[in-house]
Image (cartoon, rainbow, N blue to C red):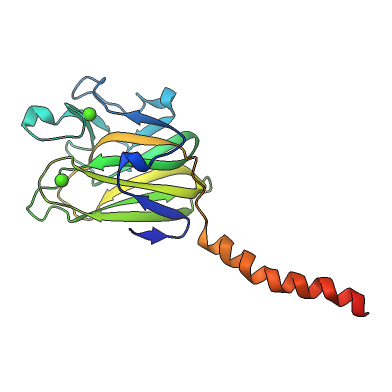
Length: 201
Ligand SMILES: [Ca+2]
Ligand SMILES: [Ca+2]
């Protein structure tokens, strides 16, 4: 488990709690642009270069995915090694399966970043690839702060993002934020001291 300020990593969709939405991309026509397809469900899919995020028939290539046949992909010419998830409603949990991790040094680690409404980084979690092309590893996080945007990024330069079963929602679990906890603990003795002081004066 990787811990960053404000986020806790989760390793399976079973760790999602409360109310959440899962998108399996299998409703979309393979090859179609899906940047705005799921806006009504609360998420827009974007690339930094503004180009299309597509539904891709991953099973059609003979590859394994977590729900067949389609995945979300930033393939094409040029392709993109990252993708953004822009949320229209507040969320504090997100997770997905990722793949396209061929054992050719294309990339060795996937990182999921979470940003607040002011576009400040809340935290991030990372997972090393298992290098088998399959969409078979789960990356996700719970956040103590509302997530306005999340971003998945490969650490290499040769391969596109391939994701399936994107899930996001409002966790029923409260995540203690380390910085807030520290402030509470530090403030307690000061409060006691201040309360006594006026009695002596
Ligand atoms: Ca799918
Ligand atoms: Ca894999």
